[in-house]
Image 1: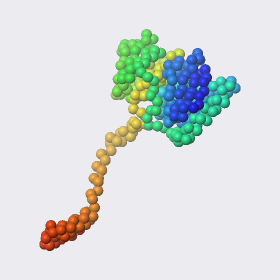
Image 2: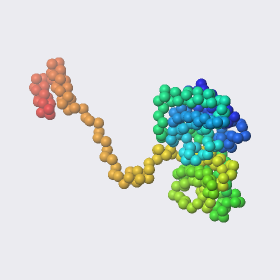
Image 3: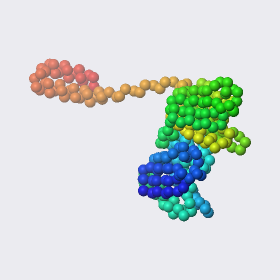
Image 4: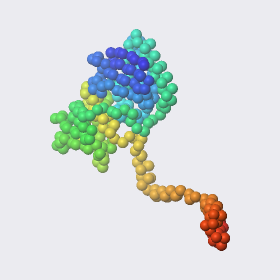
Amino acid sequence: MAEIIQKDGTWVFDGDALRLTPGRDKNVSLLRRELGELLVPLAALAGISFEQGKKSGRLKLRLRDGADPLLHATGGRLTEPHDPYQLLVESDRYGVAEYFVEEVRNALLLDQVPSGPVDAYLLPGPSVPLSVSAGDGIASFDGERVRLEWKWQAEDAKSAAGPRTLPLADITAVQWQPSVGLENGHLRFTVRAAPSKVPPKYDPNAVELWGFKKDPLMALVAAAVQARLPHPAARPAPEDARAAEDSPAPAPAPAPAAEDDHDALLRRLRELGELHRSGVLTDEEFALAKQAVLKRM
């Protein structure tokens, strides 16, 4: 077992999985504290690295594409303080960090874990129910439906429409986008048969984010919903779906080949011979039956 304990958090590797526990230091991000402890199976890892700095270093995990609903829903846009797969390492623990990396890499090699994408989530995503208030709204998810409520700062178009309830069965995609520079971020849900191209500020299926402290928590809602949607690898691309609809139905598979007629007839001749020798068939009956079999051959 390998373990590294830091103010930023504790990572433990037992040979089968990594247990990532966020630290209690005041500098640990709100998202990581709310997300809590993560259990990452070895099969979900694509790699691990350690970067040294003058005052501190950083351990980084790289997960296989499609393994974690949080990374998929956020599109890799979680900034460094909020990324649960990074750990700040103090300079006096560099040796421990390097040993930790070596242990994980050896396990990946021994288990021959591929680094390519997966077709099913290997992490469960945030637990539900959960509710987050940020930007111009409040997003809640109970595992079956999303509820969006609007704050007084929301645009009239949203406020007039009132709270929104989106059944999980109607949601086809979810996206979390952080604010960057002068551009606001958002949490947006794509709803079946009602796609919206208006900006998140006016979209009744989106919460606009303004770059405040609780914005990253909306990523937890996005990840919890994403974990319960069909995995992207299991959904055909639109072009593939249309092609499947337009293509003719495949021909039915041929029935299993019948037993070889020649071998069956030879067996029948042997059976007739035994019946004749035992006296069940007369000479005449045997001759007629034999002739009928030989004609079929």
